Length: 160
Ligand code: FES
Image 1 (cartoon, rainbow, N blue to C red):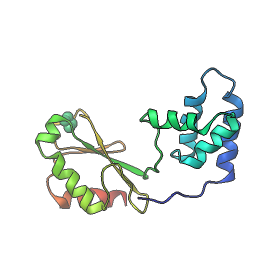
Image 2 (tube, rainbow, N blue to C red):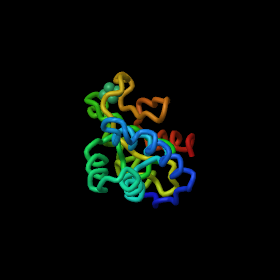
Image 3 (cartoon, rainbow, N blue to C red):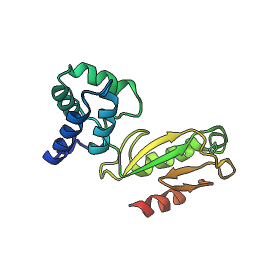
Image 4 (spheres, protein in one colour):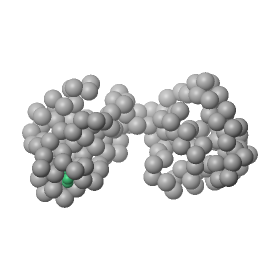
């Protein structure tokens, strides 16, 4: 897992301006948190505290929203998200083996980010490429018929 990185005053200034601009709208919290996640990459406690104090609302309210919606995350994501398809076709053709190869080579579990901040391992439902099962997707790229650890290594190297 990566450790929390220090945020810049510029990031906070940007978020502060967004809050000032939107806080009087109806139910602005989700939109503000969405933008905060764009600015910081994720929503650690210190960012949640900043939002709460600037909006003059309890931190518990902000935290409640962050943990309720699964598109918000409190842990940093890597530069590349490796999405392993765990849809039925991929599952039958060995998605679990693919996950095992990735976790061994990257030394992280599902949902975790590598120490160098390059990769986050994630699972997705069918990505519509079942004929290529088992499949992983990184950004716009789809890789199919992943059977050997050498293939996994070669794919990871492309993004390292
Ligand atoms: S189940 Fe994996 S692409 Fe369809």
